Image (cartoon, rainbow over all chains, first blue to last red; front, side, top):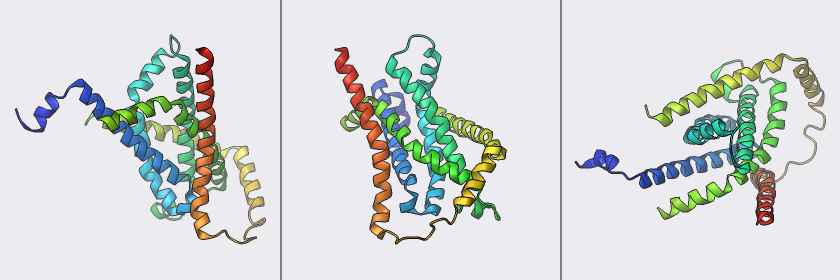
Length: 164
Length: 88
C-alpha cells in the first residue's frame, strides 16, 4: 500500500502524538499572537480589532477542542485524587473560559465597525463598552497566569516540536 | 467530520449559548447606572492635551500587554519555583 493512506496506517503512536503536539503548539501560537494583537486596539485601530476577533473565536474554540481530553479527564477526577497543580490549573481555566466569552460578547455588543457594517443601524450600548474595557484589561493578568500555570507543558511541547 | 472539527463546532455553539445567557444583564438597574455614569463622564477632558507620537501609539499598547501579562506570569512562576524548592 502506497500513498497517504499507507502513511496514516503505518503511523506510530509516537509520531501521531508528535503530530498532535505540533498542531497544539501551532494553534496556541496563533491564539497567543491574535490575543496580543487584539489586546492593543489603540495600535491596530478599532475596525481591525473587531474583524480580527472573528478569526480569534474559532482558534480559541479549536484550542479548547484540542485540549478536550484533558478538560474532561480533569473534570471527572476533580472531586477525587488530583494533584494540587492540576487542580489549580483547572480552577483557573474554569475562571478564564467564561471571562474570555464575556470579553468577546461585550466587545461585539460594543462594536463600532463590525456590527454597524453587518447589521445596518446598529448603535453600540455604552454599558457594554464600559464593561468590555474593564474586563479586557483584567483579562490580561488572568491569561498571563494561565500561561505560567501551563509553562511546563508549553516548554516540553516546544522542545518536542523542535526536536521532531 | 473529524472529532476535532466536531468538538470545535460544539465549543463554539456552547460559547455562543454562554454569551447569549450574559445579554440580559444589559436590562438591569446596574446597567442603567453604568450608562448614566458613562454619559456623564463622556466629554470631560476629551480632546485635551497633545496626542503622543505615532510610533509611541503603536508600541505603547503592546508594552502594556507585555507588562500586564508578563508580571503576573513571572510572579506565579517564581512562586511555583519557591514552593518546589521548599518541598525538596
